[in-house]
Image 1: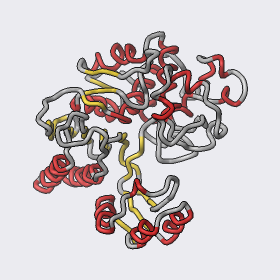
Image 2 (image 1 turned 180 degrees about the vertical axis):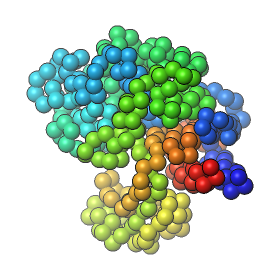
Image 3 (image 1 turned 30 degrees about the horizontal axis):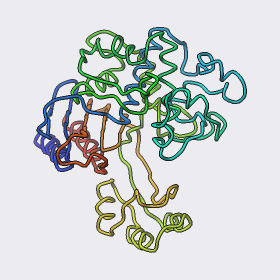
Length: 371
């Protein structure tokens, strides 16, 4: 137990040192840690892209209630303007796995925020790839899911969430950002207290069951938290996979890729100094810091490192600024870390590139070893 507690303290220290607003750790539904770290009290915090994990649960709830029969339902069944051409082949699965093929731009906000209607923006998008043939993270396409939920359930997606997901879990403090047309965002925009986000993680860990009631068919949880498309094994139905370990390697080929993409002399020199294999993200980030290399500054599309992963042990979703919802199955752990926009020591437009996921995996290994 001493090792277990030490690793939990290391995770807590990591959360504090990276200016977290809140950290919650549950083990088999019991609280190990619940701490508000920014001095601003327990309040709903913007979850950023972690919103997508809640959208996955909402879709699962809707299917459990019988509003549609399959994740492979064509979107054109609900939006008749897609009943011709290649778009008639786009399914709900494609939207949930970022394989719809809809045209996208790297900075989605450039298209989305000037738009009056996020659903119509997605419906009008051209195709960059045939549906189901390529993975491309696509916030514009994901937003269409909320339009689909509204039409399938006959209720606005946020009202459906309030009635069918939040109320059964006792979640009563939340808000959901909408586009000007009144549709909630699916890409981000859900504000929840860290403790309530942890409840949703626990619901997923418990295969859709809450206090003896099955809210979501366990088959949906199984399908959504395991690889759900042949195009990539990294994603389920809006959940990212959590492997037992991830090793990072920087090779000469990676350097060549960055050089071809137009990397600067300083970037290439720094990257060459980073060549090697790293057992976890923390070690790689330390070495990057030592060489002055900052990954996000590298040319877009450059593969500056190669990753290899171990067997799956859970699932997660992450969000800009450093938001995390992590579920580790063997350890029965649910971990939430959030950073608020009003945090007194974090810039409003800043991001947190840290090692919370590594710390959670290490904590989980000690939990498993102690049971």
